[in-house]
Amino acid sequence: MTEVRIEPWRAGDLDLLRRLNAPEVRAHTGGPETDEQVLARHERYVRFGDTGKGCMYAVLLPDGAAVGSVGYWEREWRGQQVYELGWAILPGHQGRGLATAAVRAAVAAARDRRTHRWAHAYPSVDNAPSNAVCRKAGFTLLGETEFEYPPGHLMRSNDWRLDLAA
Figure 1 (cartoon, rainbow, N blue to C red):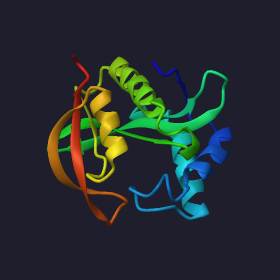
Figure 2: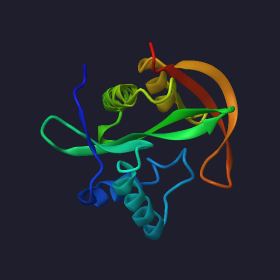
Figure 3: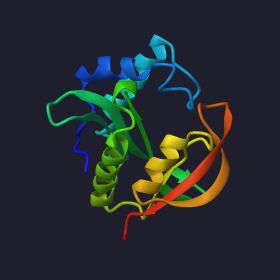
């Protein structure tokens, strides 16, 4: 099994977020953001762990190299509070199981909170690698849905669900 560790997002992770803002990483999530948007996202990620509503993490290899991000956060979905998960891995490290390992680690952290029963992920229907991550991480495909991301843009997504109480 591929080994990664996740560490809560910190102020020093801005360079990682800038590297994750590449067109090939953001192709299914609205494309690259402006530097102003990246800075605002970074500040949200740094503060996020203090809210108790989820956490963003840097994905690290055993040697400490930062290769991606993963996180979970609260959202309302179909009338109930759930966790949503999201992740991104740098292009040079994709296809090696790192995203699946990182998602499993984030699921374990969300499960430990004992706050919500369900975790969901909503990858674009045409994002085969992210849909494979959901399957490999133990999520169940509930079907297709329209999902707003980025804000103001509806995309066709798959709704994957995982039981955190299992």
